[in-house]
Amino acid sequence: MFLTIGKIVGAHGVKGNIKVHSYAESLSVFEPGRSILVINAKGIEKTFEINWAKPHSRGVLLSLRGIDSRKSAEALIGSELFITRDSLPELEDGVYYWSDIIGLSVFTIDQQYIGRVESIIQTGSNDVYVVKDLSRDHDNETLIPALESVVLEIDLENNTMRVDLPEGL
Image: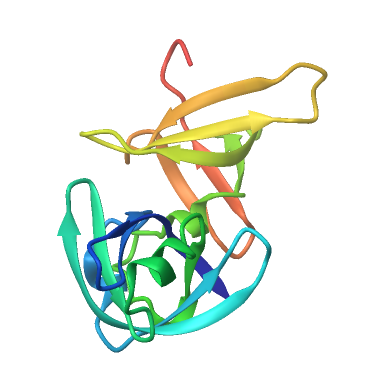
């Protein structure tokens, strides 16, 4: 299984370095020597080896083996970057990758269906799960703070999340 870890948003310099908007919290996914799958807007796939990566502004500067000119870097702008799931580090109990959370069906403690986690908003203090119930006629969206006091259980085997919503949500 492949996971999206970023998007190429620009070229940097004349040696083929690329600017990446990273979807990952850590630069560890851009480890030198790691293979990375690049898929452009037309669906063309190519695998590259990472030479080096370093933080840059709000993103990452990346050097890929075989991309050695500005022109070849510019040709990759708009492409998505992927790595295999099994290349990610193991997490502590109770900690999840966003890809594990997105798509879960969310229920209250009294079994009321709220919707599916459609996306996650990263805030300074805690993440917020954007949960939508698309089965209704109107677009119903609930924002759920990713706090232990609110998110009581995540069951990846059954693809569910149980929450205790605070008053007003």
